[in-house]
Image (tube, rainbow, N blue to C red; front, side):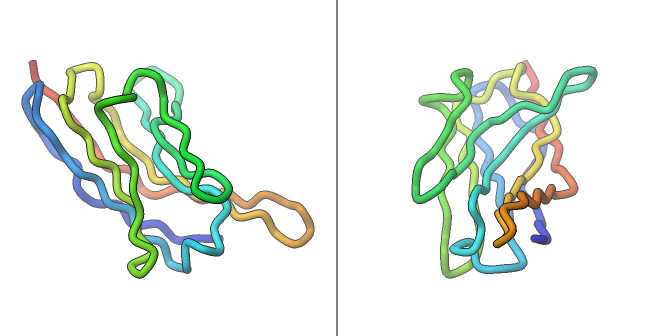
Length: 120
C-alpha cells in the first residue's frame, strides 16, 4: 500500500485560494490512480480530482475551471490548487491512491484528511 501525508488546508474567505499537497511514500509512477476526494459533514465522500491511468484526469463538475490537480514526479507529490473558493467547497479533503497488484487486486489508500473551510 501507499502512505499519504497531506498538508495545506485552512480557513479562507470566499473567492480566495488554497493549495493542498499530498506526498506519497513510493514513486507515483507505481501508483495507478492518485488524487483528491472531499467529504462535508453528513455527506458522502466525493471525487474532486484524480489522475487515472497515464495522465488522464477526472474532475468533479462542481470544480471544473476552478481547481487544478498537478503532480511533481520527483517529489512523489500531488497538488490540488483551489481557486475561486466557495462556501460549498467547505469539507475535509482526503488524498487517495490506488495500486493494482499483479494479482489484479486493487489496493486503496487514504490520507488522514485536511480541513478546508471557506467563509462567506
